[in-house]
Image (cartoon, rainbow, N blue to C red; front, side, top):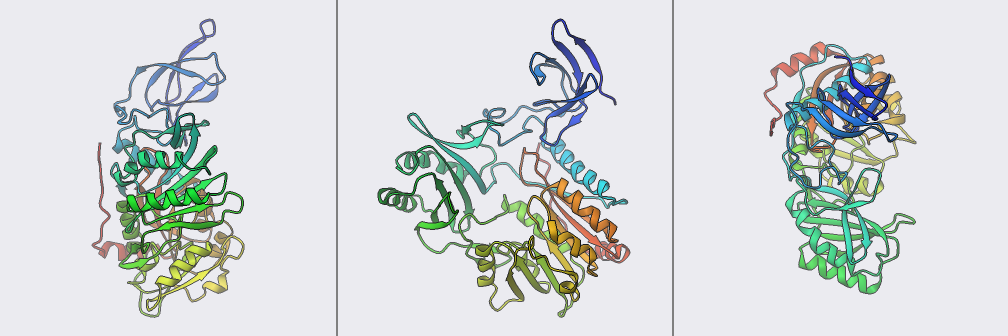
Length: 447
């Protein structure tokens, strides 16, 4: 249905609009005088009244609400920038995110897409978070930035795992006592199997007194490790550690470095791993799977149960972590910057399948050699539909078809979406194999 302007009164500066869809940032999209306008807090199908006095229309009221509108669970919604779509029901949110992925693949050239399996994580399961930290009169704020603004103190959160949220109040006290925190800083928290792992960044170096306070805090709250990152050279040093830092990937215990990449939720990680394993072709003992952007081994070690894996990672600390855990297993780990030194077609000539989980910007310089290679099967784990579309165009031109698709919503109430895309140059064979598989990714339809 086209956008309609029910009323546009230049004398009163008020217009009534119909919301047609959602933009990439989660704002409602309408048209006014032939121009697209974005109105936060609105949903498709809603009739709204806006004030035109400012450069951006300001919502006055929702005249007709969408049936998918729900009451946001968090009192900070609309102020904290962490969630964009708490006013949209969870089933509708998952459907919207799925459509974003499908539209990206279609725009890349892929047709005849298979039915997508879908998974949505539960609230209060987020185990990784990057916080803004700011000293204010009378204390310290720990939270997320409001849109284009200052941090909002996280006094409530329906996304975070309780083990992380429960640390925020005592963290405000200890960070407020540090001489190194003179203004703004940051705090990254990973909830590992061994406990919370914290990486703190402050504008000034930690003093001896600061280090003593942080070590005492780590002991009191059973933290696996506290590290400090120098904002000038980004070097990281361990300030306090209570014991072995550990995380389990596919039955293998690894020791992640400070600020290591970790999938945002444990149940979402399981869904992604299952989708990747299901997407691999049948392998024999001699077949090699090449993994690109391998991190610390989230996918590597589960895949090694099916065959030999050659894993490449550009971050030195993560690559060393993977290699240290790989001893005696069917895994070869390599440190290689795939942006500056991508694997070339001849490097992949004996590769049975490629699995890649690139950063948000996509596979970059590695995409062209992949497209030019003779690799028959590929599994692409995407965290950005725009990058998936860009990389996908090259793979479609290279003769790949999409033969399997899983959508994973692990960043609940945000606009972010993960997808596991199974690609093959022999679509008929892969579809025959898939029809024989009994594995399935669990689904969730919380509302």
